Length: 173
Image (tube, rainbow, N blue to C red; front, side):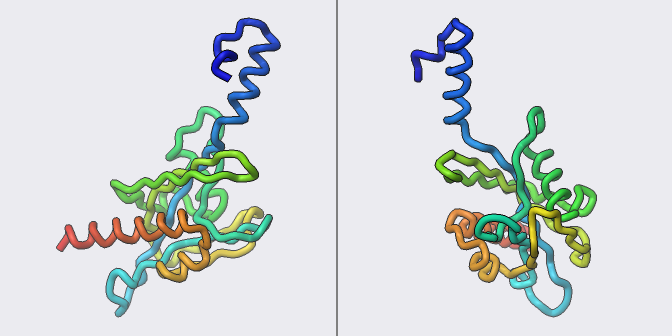
C-alpha cells in the first residue's frame, strides 16, 4: 500500500483513499457516567455506573458512546452521544479531570477506537431517557457493572474509573 500513497492518477487516488479508509479505525467517544448515592452507604460503595443495553445485535451493555461526526472533536462527540442515547446533557454532567481511557478492538473485522471520559451526574435523581438504540439501562455498582459489561477491556476501564475516583477521594482527605 505504501506505493499508492504517491499516486497521481485519478483512479489510483480513488483506490488509494479506499484502501486507507478500510484500514482506518472507526472512532467513537462517550462517557462513563456515574452517580453518588446519598445516605448511609460509605464511599466507594455509594458509586453507581450507568450502562445502556443495545436494542440490536447481542443486546450488550455499554456506557453511552457513539461515532465521531466529520469536523467534530472527541469531547463534543461524547457530550452529544450521551445526550442522544441517555438524555443527559452537559448541564447535568460534571466531567472529572484527569481521566480518559482509550479502548481498541475489532468490529466485524474493522479496527475501532473508543475514548471514554468520566462524568458525574450532578443530581443523582435525574431521569435517564433512552434513544431507540437502547432498550434498557441500569445503574450498577462496580462489580455488577463489570458483570453486565462482559468485555474485559470495558471491565478494566470501569475499574480504572473507580480507582481514579478513589484516588481523588483520598487526596481530598
